[in-house]
Image 1 (cartoon, rainbow, N blue to C red):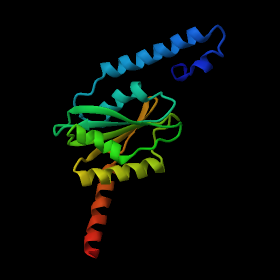
Image 2: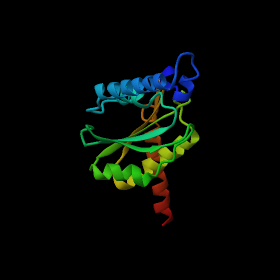
Image 3: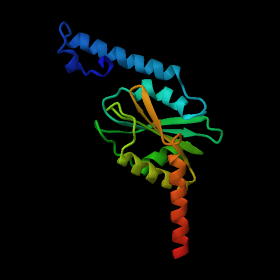
Image 4: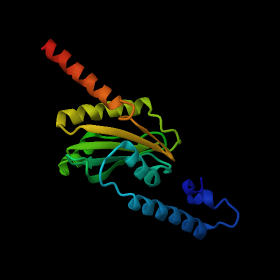
Length: 183
């Protein structure tokens, strides 16, 4: 909880003034940066690799952050972009911005990532809708979404591990077949 505390919250503690609060906040930020650089992603082997990288980086933030990890054909990481910062309970993500980053890097695939400040990594209905929209956009652009990972403090959830990306892809294919049958 201390790592998530804001300066005003820290200053309510006995003996902690503005200077000490600033030092504490800065120390935790430096620790987050150090941990995230120690665990650089080089190759996407499975969702746990990305989750372990993300947890120290965004797991304890107080507002939602949405990241896109761009991968080459061998699933090597070729870039990471913070696409949007949101509020405490939601983040608005524009698919054009998500895929602009991937296109600029000539990515072969992407992994979507965001945090839940609540501490509960379970996806919401809006997370499901966003993921479905981005999977459909990725199919159209031939930049598949391999996974969507949600981190919350020390926990995480993977759409890929739960078979939900595949299910969404199958639903999109079925809708395309239905549409072709109507044409």
